[in-house]
Image (cartoon, rainbow, N blue to C red):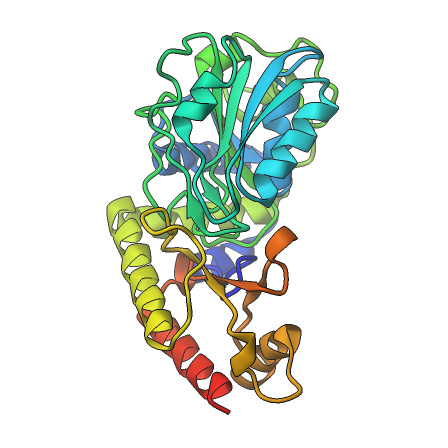
Length: 357
């Protein structure tokens, strides 16, 4: 139940065993098109350019910046955790003039502060579900009053876990990861870009591999596709299967299941005397951050030892804190196929036994 890769949906595991196909085989292209369509449904968008980048979520982040940012462009970034920090780093490497809007770790970013930070930025960027803190940031109003700015959203931990409405929120660029609430193995970065964003594509991005000008002719369109790279066939098979499981359940039902498990976990932690870290009203159900009561650990056991005991004794992996809360906060993922009441009960029982020793 760590914040990293969760147990995939059985459909995703089974799909990886399909016989291999070539990356330009018509059968694979048809399956890729189906995967892209399923991603549109998961992102709640009609964007034609919606596809899985052939790398992990961090490559989705990089694709979002290198294709739209040129030296000197103003980029406003909301920062309330490690992945907002990473956005700043990536944008800066593209030569952007980065304007940070900071909030304390554990607190949400003020969306009005993002809007007010610059009169005419090229991009306003925000992490929807900050994986390092378990905080949900508000998105819906970012496009208002900034008609020329592109809104870029990190949805790595949010797609299929909580409502994501790319078109309704007027988000122009978004990316996710397969290993979180989508319930597939890691290795792909679902990505979408609006037609408005594509009108502002950089002619020659700094990255050849992530150049959307070329990738688009491979991943979308009618008829023959232009060769760009060898797609990770089995990973796309797996994503296709995982998306099928999510959509068969129904996005609303999937969101509700994550919400119920997250609420049960957070209530149970408080009943055990733990203190939740993320601000009330902005807590992610799929990723719970909690202060570690170090004083209640058995003699001779430190924070890392407690996580190791959970793994060795109970088969439960809990994520460590990052940055300023490393060693002080745990991050507990309850995502995708793993978001089940039985897993919540198992973890709460294990924590009660460990901290009562």
